[in-house]
Length: 87
Image (tube, rainbow, N blue to C red; front, side):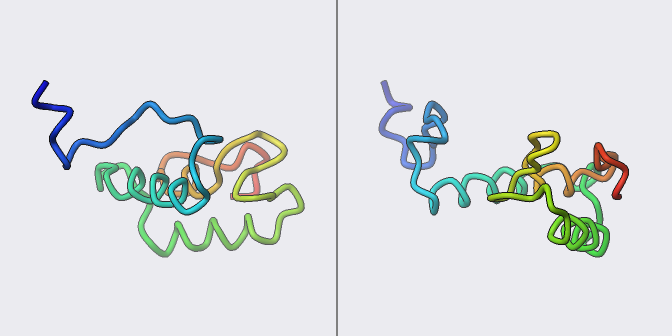
């Protein structure tokens, strides 16, 4: 198949546990960067949300231990909110 030889095509069949931390972070930020701009929070709101999460006791390894979300992904979507009303 020609698609398999295309260097632009990314493998989408990896489990998170099979990725290095560097590959995981690259994948997360690549996904965030590809989101439509009209659904993203503006940079100031995104950073404000992340600063709230950084002070929260539920934050661990980029995830909310209370609801299970990836905080950077939840924070970047304009219409999202913290499940616990913190933002």
